[in-house]
Length: 220
Length: 396
Image 1 (tube, rainbow over the protein chains, first blue to last red):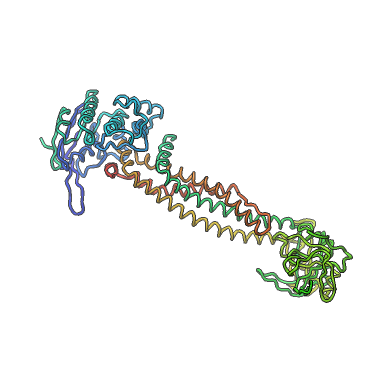
Image 2 (cartoon, chains in turn purple, yellow):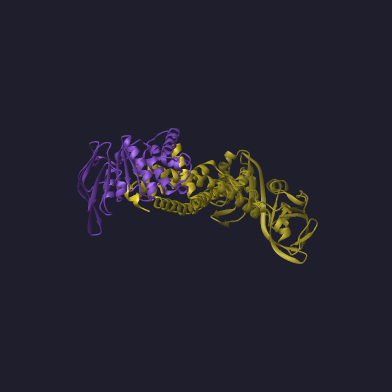
């Protein structure tokens, strides 16, 4: 289970303070599929970065399985990112020097999984997202939709409980977007918690629960 | 670990042009060190090698040598020669006269130094190491014959002098019976510009019976220093002076040359160090560029669970692989350059000179390359590892 307590993030831009998050209290149950909607600048990506342990709050806390992440050091946060969370970005963010299977295997590389084991698992994951015939392609040789599917396979490589998507369909066409959402729904049915940020109501409709954000606050 | 090598190798290969330039930067620095050191050792060996062949020799002069200047205080007497002969441990002794005279050849005149001594002894000092190109060496009864050095034969007069040509000195005619080969550096100053006579002939020509130079060979090289002191004492006693004679063993000359070479090597290493500093600034620049360029990638790696230490070790591995290759290339190039320089310099100076590649120089070169690579990779690597994942991911 993930929950936040009075989560606040303030950015300093010169003399001005920008409140990206204001006292956000949100609870996400295990196995839930939640979509967070909101216009750009509403703080939804910042919230996602906090939950994904990519960023640290100015005040307040994120609790993951009742662990206050604010009390963890950098290595412990890295371990959570590696073991418990799979992150999918709008820009795919694949490592362009590595091919598809190596990209998928990268989180297992940092987890210290043996090379043959992780390449085998990475290939299986690619087959599962329908890229069995693209395993040795570099990201530059793949379409946007294919790259995002590689990114999904990568997010799953350490078998995380939570998959987080920051506008995962933002850079692909509608059809591909629906296919990606289908994959995420499938992952949810396997029991994983899915947290997606989007401004597209159609995409949000895939989720079991929807929250809206505005000006750094979670509404309703 | 093998995987980390693979990842590091990939990113080196991905940035091929810049990696090659970085490797070259290090290689130039290391090659400079290896080449300069090896040439330095080669020079030293070439010169001390020749000197070691004469390690049993002691030169005795009536004067003082301070630095590069020689002050003659007089000349030796027959008694000096006899007293030196009596010292235990001496194998041979040669007394020599030595002075300049005006030499005429085919109506052309030139002042030339004349060296006279016991023909057998002189021969053993000069003929064996230098060699006779034309004719033969002096005989004991060659009162009207002389042997000439290479420069006397070829450079001093408009026309080249050959065997059986006639020279006129102080109105007397002498026949050239032999011409020396061109001498190597060690002997060039002694042989090339000189005329050689028997002791009697030289004393007649120079109208003197003074002895200006005594050369001694000892049986045991280890005793040379002691014998040299005894020689100085014996001659100083004869002349009633403290510092009249100076007896130099080759060993002490080799030592002096060694000191000089240490200074030369220091200077060479200094020059090479500058090259290396430039190279390491280059590596650091490359690594910093590489970090900047890959900020986004570093962010992604951290976002998917890489620890700071993972990122640090990847970047350090990358810079040490680049420097390892740079070091190896540098050593190879350095050795080749050293051989070429030594060959060229040897040919130009007319001596046998080969670069001496010491294993410790190669190992040192590799070590320096690695240290420079790791140190100059460390700052960028640490910078990379400390980036906040969210900011790094956002960086495009």
